[in-house]
Amino acid sequence: MPMSDDLFIRKDPIFVNKELLEISHLPDEGRIVGRDEEIGQLANAVNPAIFGQSPSNVLIYGKTGTGKSLCAKYVSRRLVSTAEEEGVDAVFAYVDCAQDTTETQTAQTIASAVNTDDTDIYIPDKGISTATYYKRLWRILDQEYDVALIILDEIDKLEDDAILMQLSRAGEAGKVTNCKIGVIGISNKIKYKDRMDERVKSSLCEREFVFPPYNASQLNDIMDARNDAFRDGVLEDGVIPRAAALAAREHGDARKAIDILRYAGEIAQAKGADTVREEFVVQARERAEVDRFRELIRGSTPHSRYALQALTVLSLERQADDPIDEDEGFRTTRVYDVYEQICRQEGTDALSLRRVRDLLKEHAFLDVIEQSRHSGGSAEGSYTEHTLLEDPEVVRDVLSDTVD
Image 1 (cartoon, rainbow, N blue to C red):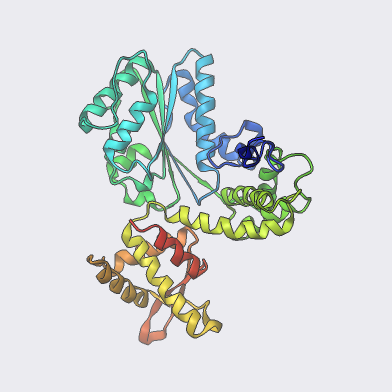
Image 2: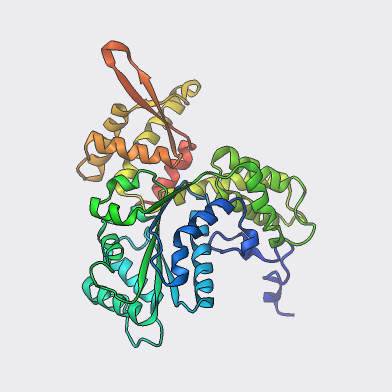
């Protein structure tokens, strides 16, 4: 027998369908847990599309791992199939705006997603103007569809509102005459709307929904619904409840809960264990925390990272000098002083104190840092302190791995 035969595992002793534990996997209806109300609200907003009418434009807010993208894709997929039963040609396109940040990239992705072999319209990856992408997109939509639903995930990562203006006013401007267009915008930032152009805001923000974090019971059910990813008898009884409790206590993040479960299985696999034990969950949580944090700052701007790096530097210094007080926060002005030093080291101009304060607020929204207001009395007035919620050594390592 060739030596190479012993190199690979022919039968996975832990997993039978690992795809169920991948974040990119879109589960069946029965596997979407704890989001019945949100799915119903979203379906109601886009319901007119089933009859070839204009769906409401929607903005969905919520922290990472609260099921926003999952539910938007699920409802859109169901809408397309239901519309077909009613004799309506519908389509949906999904855009990851953390990857396609420019107007041109987004227009190209949408056009490629909705194009068919029947149109004879060519959508190249690059090499044509933004205006030409739009013209071809409008032609495809009018030729092929009655309704199109466009999902813009992480919409706050777009460079500007240009694509939103085009999509939300395409019918009004006569760009499309046969096809009705609806937009579902998804953001982790609940104040994203405040940055919008007023004209876009008036046409895009018809319906708004906030997805709350999952509780431990919901996370437990989510993982139970996917436990057939493992072979029978492999998961020990306490594994799923422990993973759910850890994820609920820290973030209410379903992605993290599923990651912990998958990593625990991989750790068991690597150790040659017959079962996934509770002790592997704790190890998996540490690995998931690093990956979660890396995902949170993926696509963030350099100055957003510099502001976080400044708080990390201060946290590491305090940890070394006075571990007892390591949980105390740092004032905005002190963080800003270190931020300016980092900008000088990087050879770039520092942003204003007000802008850095906004960047720190964004990190607080993502639960990377915690902010607290304090009163300094009549002499100082009130001020904000910032505390790093992540292990500063983990933050330092991840930031060094994500340098542009």
